[in-house]
Image 1 (cartoon, rainbow, N blue to C red):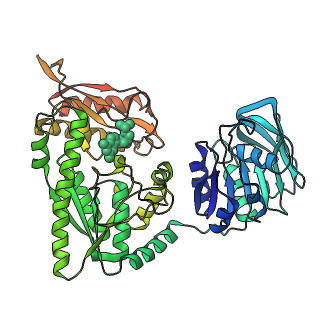
Image 2: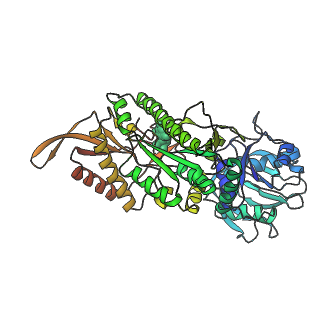
Image 3: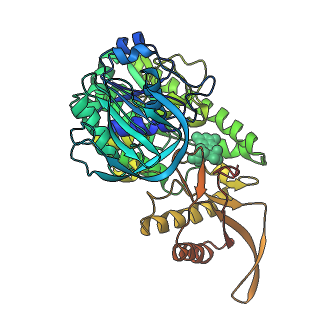
Length: 517
Ligand code: XMP
């Protein structure tokens, strides 16, 4: 793998993704990694990320200097560039010439490996207070900016390279090309890591690990569990048993769509358990959001365990055992929960409703090494339809979080109708991939006065909550075009009799969360 050493900025994940886009598999490691550990992991190349600190701040991330002597090609970025300079004997100083944002870079060395075939003047994205004022012995300075006389350096004989700017961000015009030059030309990687190869390796590993035992998977209707299940299905066919618990809180047509598309694409054994009456029964009269979540989580486990017992009994009849449970854990979850290899660190938030804690099964997590965009590619590779693979996130507790007040079958119907209109209009307008998700919230306990025809109405308002986001940790309200909003408002108030008012939530996250409950 290419190791991305994380020096504490939010850029490490972005760098790891860009490395993969160049066709090289990458993993994020902490800056405390030792040279021995790098050797053990058989790193093919190293990229050191940027970070918020100055190399002079007490406690600022430093690196094991022997990392630079392993013969493994290294590319330092921003803070990583400065750490390299300082560790190898160059000088870093507060020059007062800090640069933030777009900056003009001038390439001064036509023999540069990194800047091969790249125009001598280009726009780059900068974010630095300190600057390298003298490069270490053996390095050539290859580029400069007005505020950074040493904006890039390289020592091809030791395969050490660095740049002061951020090649991983889109505003840096030739950023990806420079990264490719490092990975392919300087480090000699082949750049042949593709989703096709990922599927092949995973299928092989799963087959070997599972043997003749059977596997259970809970499908949520979301992308991750569907792709994870499809991958396992490709590996072991009818040894996989999928369960979809229909809690009655899904959106219009959702269960049917998963049932149809997933089974058509994979041929997997899928049992849909309609438990809506049980769930709605337990939710009757409940208005507190946390209480709703708890009830749904508890009931989910109960229903899932019953399905599990059914599967176990069937499998036992054929003299086999069930040994594994599939989870759609992704790489960002692994990184954020500080989990290294093997650690089954699952954020309960990302589960369907939380799975039993005393699991009698081993976990299969075939997406543990992948980012969301890669999971989607794997899904397409496995033949899942675009509508499933490009699904926007939808919370496990479903529409329960989007009805403020008590959840009743009538309110669910109203919300489903409004939500279907919103989804339809956003798709028609081609906006699906530009927004992260668009919850539609029914203010069940609020009534507002309206006028329709000759009479006064006393209906419910709904709130549109379109957001843009990278990872749901932070979000901004999406600036949907007025004409799209107008169509949505018109259609909802015309087609859903009980709704007489459509409002727009214009709060970023923080302070507002994406969901209302
Ligand atoms: P918030 O509302 O916390 O949501 O800004 C962030 C993301 O998580 C989803 N979400 C949930 N997903 N169970 C889930 O599986 C939950 O209880 C839950 N609450 C929020 C939300 O849709 C958004 O994508």
